[in-house]
Image (cartoon, rainbow, N blue to C red; front, side, top):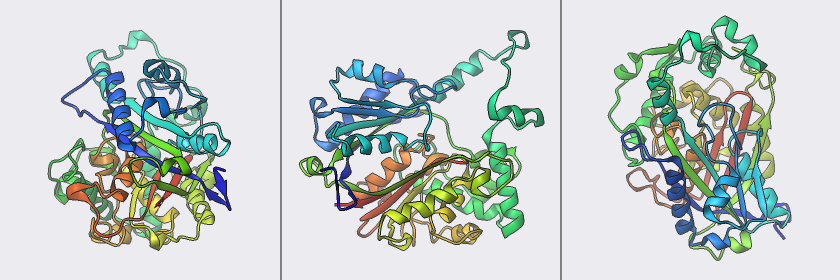
Length: 396
């Protein structure tokens, strides 16, 4: 059975990524197919063995955030699958992984192909080439943003900036401490051949960067790109017949809710990571100190600090001192953090790249950026504000 004695009988068996960068724009389906091919080869599986497919979201409300839905990919690959999922809402980007576990648990599938594909850099180029004119008209703002945009809060970066400003005020967190985290991700990205930004960065570069929304500057924001990441989730008994050592899903947690207020550092106001983290540890006997590698969501840099506190790697309000100097979070530190460059320097793969990197580290395939020692327990977290998801992996 997929679940035995409270243990999740599912594991990650393969991972593939195609991120051609900003100098080689390609049709997004070609990018997607390359990632699928790499993931299948990684697991030693064939397309005929895939009997489930999952993504999130199915179709996003904003352009090119989810350009390939499950039906399109299924037909392109010629898959004969029993399980499909592509929800319009869920507890952050790992929703598709959770759906895959559900399909395996219920006996609907043995090997589920989960993916996240984006073409946001292409969209950015298109928007620059064809800017909207005032005469084109504008759509009426509805939903949660109708309470934000009259005050010129036009992007989640503003909400994150105000949250971090409050963190600075209440706990004494400094911009330079945040910079130590950002520089650590850049140093890791320099050793990652798939990262978008691989050039050197100094603290002066970081502190002097163009301001986006005070106190967050350019390097506090993730890097848009076209990319596809594929993760194969398999039933554990089937996983042991694949090419690699399975990465057992030791536990996972999802949270959604909150009102995404501007400056509140509490779950009920949108910081759902703070509920997600404690819940994750209820499903396992492992503790935060056992984790050997962590790749935490950094769509905007302060979100990774939120996750550090939420997952219990440091106390509430203590994430600034925790990352200060970068030694504790370096590749040979107490908690190697965002080892592939995260989303700030590695590129915005909407959380999936963080899960991919955790897998790579646990399989010992990190190359120059490989964490030393036995990386037998790893964690990935995705989502900022009202969405939060985390996955704890154990090498079988």
